Amino acid sequence: MSDVQKILVLDFGGQYKELIARKVRACKVMSVIMSGDTPIERIKKENPIGIILTGGPHSVYKEGSLHADKDLFNLGIPVLGICYGMQFMAYTLGGEVSPCAVSEYGKIKTHVCTKSPLFKGIEDVTPTLMNHTDYVKTVPAGFRVTAHTKDCPVAAMEDKDRQFYAVQFHPEADLSERGHDVIRNFLYEVCGAVGDYTIDEFIEKEIQRIREQVGDKHVVLGLSGGVDSSVTAAILERAIPDQVTCIFVDHGMMRKNEGKEVEAAFSGKHLKFVHVNAEQRFLARLKGVTDPERKRMIIGEEFVRVFEEESAEYEGSFLAQGTIYPDVVESGHASGAVIKSHHNVGGLPKETKFVGLVEPLRTLFKDEVRELGMLLGLPEEYVNRQPFPGPGLGVRCIGELTKERLDTLRDADYIYREELKNAGLKYDQFFAVLTSMRSVGVKGDGRTYNYVLALRAIHTTDFMTCEYAHIPYEVLDKITSRIVNEVKGVGRVVYDITGKPPATIEWE
Image (spheres, rainbow, N blue to C red):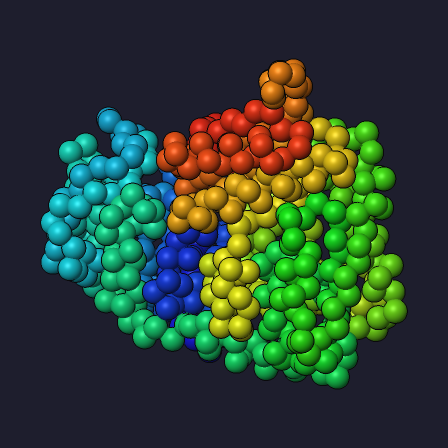
């Protein structure tokens, strides 16, 4: 995608950097995330049409805070500063940044100058998301104030001659109701974007790149059944038909009927599909293990061992992975800060039978991967399926993992998903959790002592935070009635109403 227009998102440690990059791409402009201290020569090499400076957790005037090279402002490239990015721009160009007399958090009524290119077509009073303890007290020479709030006299500023723009609020967040328009105005009114980034264009260029990289060699993919690996398989099959082998390792912790669904999705394709039933092998290694991190480690280790055994005959082939852009960014690549390491980032191990790595989705966000999957002909219900952790139900079944307990969870989870679908309810993620706690109950004239099952459903845009979903009581009644009557081993159903924070989305 090197020949399309590009926006650089320079990261200063803000939690919304990926959201900024995604919002840019939603406007049909390519975005790339790099560290805030990326050298100027590296920035020039990217040849961006504009640069966005992200928020960050530090005070720009304190020692040790992350700064970009000040020559960034001598490149003749439009710059948009957001939150910390605005403060860095002001501080570097001669303005003054100070602690707020009154800090602002949450949705704030913001008065904007509609004559500014940044606020073209936006109401003169608009709600924005504020989250800051510092503010720009004095703007640099050549700048003018273009927005303010009750407690923040400089909520936006601009130097139109040098094409420098900045906002104290977060336009990338949904709570900034016209934030999308602010970003779009920067791209099209300031940077001169033409909107030449589309997934359709990506497909054709990526297919050509794969063909050039692989040639006539074979490619082996560890297919998990998740969206990323499935879309990887689909584009490989389109690019190099009959040169791909997909090894699907069924560890026995998939959702009900999921193994059959994965196999059906790839039947009749121009690739070899190998279904490895390794349930007994995984459960034998997990016997007696209750610690969630230990379970994750064992499942991950065993998956690698099974895949290595099954792929042994493909020495000299390429290895394909469903690495996506957030994996790369969070693992500290592209000069970014390390948030967490991902197992599928970092290249091939030193000792390997494979000759190279193929990662078709490495530059894409999850929503782009789903769009790509639809364009490649994967079933809609498959592409838009619920997010599912690598260890599968292994981290939704609290305590020891046995076939009996996993089957109980599978059946209950299936009923839950089925009844939400029947009710026409859609949430960003929903699933059942089999707890390790038992509860006294009664069936007929007899006492029971069965498991407590928890239900979870959430609303989220980025999975960094979430709110619980308000499932109608009548729907919860039906779900509960079916589960306790149809699923052996469950005697009580509870609904999780905890947001993130303080909880996480998954239970383990």
